[in-house]
Length: 233
View 1 (tube, helix red, strand yellow):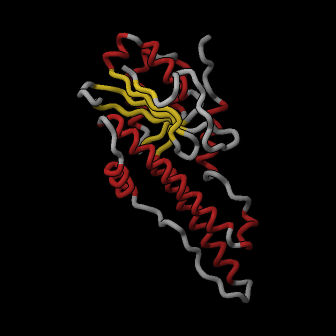
View 2 (cartoon, one colour; view 1 turned 90 degrees about the vertical axis):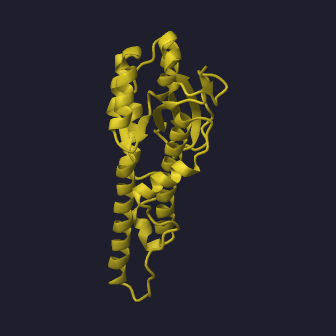
């Protein structure tokens, strides 16, 4: 039986965080459920990684009632799938594509984010901000301290292992989805720490108002909304 943290499959969750023009992320994992059966986990996340919907469906149930799978996956239609590599969600979509509308599968395949790319973008911005501090140092008589980050950028392997050990769940397939959820939220927090550190320096405010997510990441989320498939009536 499918498990769902929402009240119903069709109920829209109340957004816990709001990013204009973006809906958020989707996570797909496969593995064993609490009874040891092969299952698919589908998680729906906000733009900053807060879970707003979670389902675990056995593959045997999917074969008996494919419409249930369709109703759930439609909730990811305007979101980016996210994982450590693009191959993982692509492979899962390949397993269930014959049970879903072609345009929905195409949209999901086209909008996949990878954690290493998201981390790299934050690293790039931190380096850019540090260079801006050094440039300002050459034109001011004030003594400037280097930028200090609330949290240093983690090694991706360490981040993956840490998330896996901290994600307690009733089943391996749910634990995998929870681990990815934790990584997305952690990565978003790393960006927010970055923007807070920058904006505390008044001379760096000319670089723009604080943004909820890095530019490329945010643009990808917004593009997913713009290319959403049309749900069947």
